[in-house]
Image 1 (cartoon, rainbow, N blue to C red):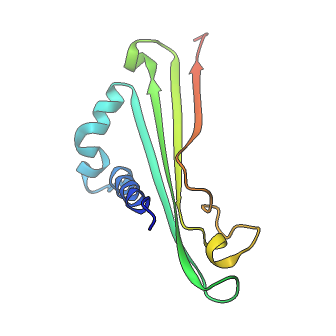
Image 2 (cartoon, rainbow, N blue to C red):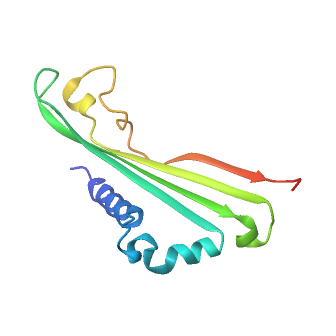
Length: 135
């Protein structure tokens, strides 16, 4: 049994809860007041979640279906608001691809069936610091 499955479900539920932006529901878009408070203190959080279920109905190694998902979270810090340092921005992004590879389990091809099909692991995707010097 794969013990990571409950963790993937938790990631999916958290992503769905925090990334949803219902225009009619002011409580969803501002996270019950947390988003404006964080932005006032220099923190901006973004995220999205992509998921797919693919199937092999004929040929390959076996017939069957597989699930793939990708959680993408980004944090940006305005250092003037956060710590008083003007002109600097800190940016960091993580990704967590997860799921069961249709290619490995059912197709058996060297090319992958989906662009979400990769090794399941939490990864630092991008990180940088920008400092403005002249106005």
